[in-house]
Image 1: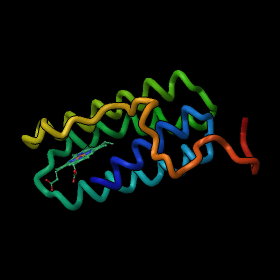
Image 2: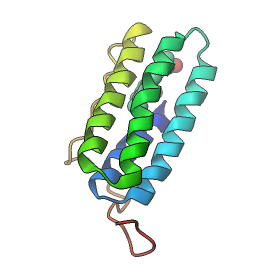
Image 3: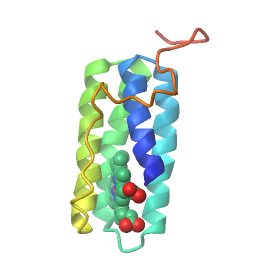
Length: 119
Ligand code: HEC
């Protein structure tokens, strides 16, 4: 889940920087991590996984067209899903939020660097 935490954070900063290629990449990574978590922790109610599906698809749509508002809203919905699952597994003390702009991982550039960008 530490990987998911970092991917969630990077997804957010990439989208905020309108680096949609990086956001699409982090979204794929995060989706894989969540799928792995589902396999790794048997006992997780299926509804907790399906709850994540809708926001993940909404984020994918937002990233595809570069819709900043939809991106922010759907990442927030996804984040609620993280907490719903933690709470249902008696881990409500693991509370995830959309990162604040003061705390990016300082060792990675999030703005697009040349290359091929959609926008
Ligand atoms: C399907 C259920 C489920 C979902 C969805 C889920 N988690 Fe978790 N998460 C867990 C479980 C279970 C643990 C506790 C693992 C343990 O105790 O070994 C956990 C633990 C964590 C931890 C603590 C790990 C540590 O070592 O400090 C973080 C951080 C975390 N999750 C982040 C997230 C983020 C971010 C999301 C959403 C993108 C998310 N989780 C979605 C089930 C879930």
